Length: 396
Length: 156
Image (cartoon, rainbow over the protein chains, first blue to last red):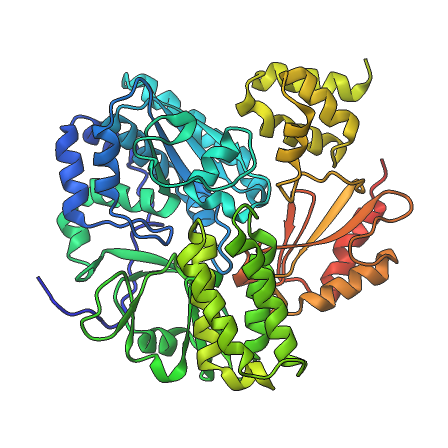
């Protein structure tokens, strides 16, 4: 096992490589022992690719262990994080891979019903995806596996990508996150044990079923195995979606995708972190593990900013986003987002002394500690990383 | 029975009368009528046998389920960071100029409503906008004039 936590940038091609062999992979995998499939996923060290990074095999195991008369598998396609657009491409180009992994998950946990929660902004995909589902279900019937999938459309709410808000949305309610515990593995959609996996996670699971856990695990670095799709946008000559081996440094990334004048990179979208130029070489892209430097988890959103951009405007845009997308049920997030935005505006206009930013940093820390869900907790990530690194741009 | 009541009945038959059918039914009404009136929300409540306040509570949470009068074509311009960096404001000004309305307004003939929205997921092809469910990317003022021109010529 390699113990490096960073790696030179390596492009790979698994997800969008379509050899149209899903039928074969599905039949083959459904013949395997359930526990063996879970072990295979666990040993691959695949972690959730939506951003939170929960071990996928463990999620399947916990749900499989829950006793219930009914269980569900849900593919989370409510891709709303600013700067992410990979899930749409997966569902447009290789939907069968995602459906195959959903069916295998259903087999493992003991479910017969699956849903794809598709964000309203991607409604144009609904028709083609429905056709893919029909073909898929037809094949499942042919091989005697009972599994049905339907698409559930979102209606323009970022927070519904949070798994418990997603359940409430599907149950016909406001998409407000629930208290955890209970966790979805025991109490999910309609109160039944539910696996919620991001689109890309499922596509990687297909890769693992096809090539085996070892091949996946041999890619990447310790704590961050395998590959990841990166959505690259902003000041770059080559915006788009790229599959890369996990664990490269931000320096390597910027050399590949930057425009020669990159001042900072926002890793992980508005809820992620801003990394200034001086820290590119000590920052690795991956999950936990801080052996040689900072390692950032990411849903794959990489936004590059060059020296013509004002970081005040960037932060203002993010806070405006959070203020609108906060569901409003908990005070730290609802009021916090409003106050952070009003606060940086007041400092910029000179109505407040620059030391007021210290108070706002404290407020963002309070939100991190007390907000109910990941939205309110993660506002501090971009807020603190931008304010601390670009203090002077906030003030004047 | 008027057309809205008939539509809601159809949707209830298609999706069922469970609470889990609420969002698909609301979406079905919005697809046809572009927004939800008080009347249609009360009708949905009756059809599903739930309080009208629950229907409004759910509907008002979602930005694509409008509860105010909208035009037949709802234009949503993405305002999130990359689109903002790549000239979203020029797109917006072009549309305002062509339709002679400002952000949030509907043209007097009830054909167009102009709104902004959060990240549409087209950051690599920014700036982007939606007209109803149709997505347009890599917009420039010229391209916007071309696209809206096509909508101007549509009669119905």
